[in-house]
Picture 1 (spheres, helix red, strand yellow):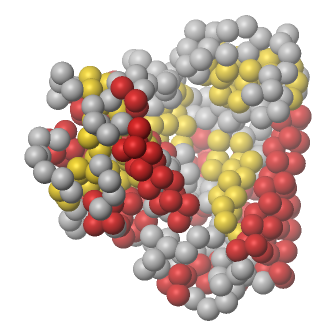
Picture 2 (tube, helix red, strand yellow):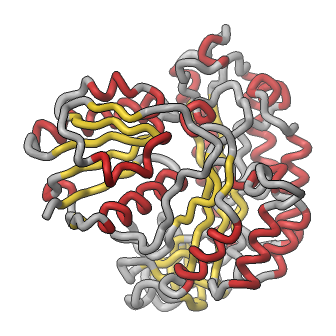
Picture 3 (cartoon, helix red, strand yellow):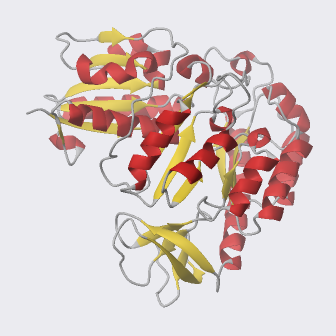
Length: 427
């Protein structure tokens, strides 16, 4: 019996795709290898959001072929959709399967020859395979309920490799969450542009309507929303999050820049004042909620004054963590051909400034939770958990994985907090 290993790179939606691939391959009678080195078949589920993501993938392929020449390699995901011929030329690669054909991967392994490419136009159907039982070291399954993006941000390659926004049918989502709720305490709803769920259906169905259905029609103990665009955090959605103790108090809204002029060049659909309104409303209704953002530095033409405007805007808002990225030109996007590309050294310096700012906000938020009780789901190791408001918690004593309970925060650790009665954990 053939063994397989799926290695996923990138976002939560890709992680959900990877879990679905694992379930599909297992359903075909293959055996999941405990580690990559023991696999007959290796599936690399790729990201292409930055040049460094592409570089990492190529390095992994070369090392894998050098160390495990007998392993058969299949590359899928966003990089595969964007540049299949480039990947098919790498040593040891037998198949390249784009996002357009990802759900056919369990059948593709029967193909006999090197460099077989399965990439086509991404249609309007929802292509994600169901997640019946995520494998590996996970107790918080990511359920992808939306794919693709219809926005046209000038820096982003994702619409061309994921297609237009499309949604999983509501009845299917309810059925899958109902099944997952019998095994897991927390389920994460994910998507490429999650807040657009339902917009491709007739009528005015919205994400908030689906979340209400999940609360009413399933026994899920905790739902967590992954990244949602700021203007999709409607009052109705925020109110529901605030009122229900079954929804994690966690708001992640991509910002990209706090400069009005940079946002306009990015073709983002909001201005800083709109973004601030949503974040401040969330905090007004959920005073202890986690507030996170994706922020980009060094977008083409970003001046010192624009960067300072972005930094000051971030300072003004109650973020509890930041994901800071250095701008990376993606071939085929308008920003890649824009004049006034910011020197890489300047980009990196700005990235370090914002990362330090984010670390300071994170420490302040964690310190504010000392002496408070938080609801925590225990992770696979049993030594750590994740709170409803997105704090890594080191337990005073090991817990059984996949439990949901309240603990008292005793102090601040290096990258989280620790339960009262335990010592700080440094890793």
